[in-house]
Image 1 (tube, rainbow, N blue to C red):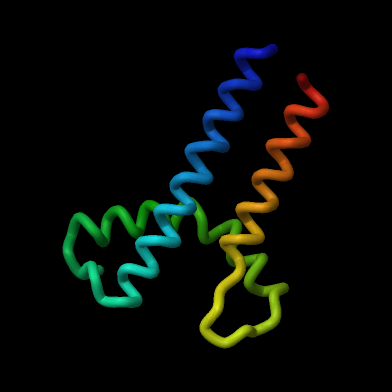
Image 2: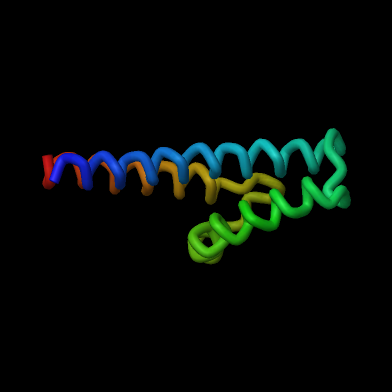
Length: 92
């Protein structure tokens, strides 16, 4: 059971890191540091968007409009960390 728990923890960790990469990449595009029209960058961003947008879109629909500030990645990060803590609390 411990190996299964460690596998799930590793998957959650990879998801968190990819979420952070997605947020930083969106900032780099917003500040025009990287070009989103390059094929490699576009493919990476599309992959990250397909992973994270299905979970961030419902959060965005509930959140009030704060102008240009998007807090949905922070809320998603907190939710994933909470689920990780629950997993360790009940299974370990």
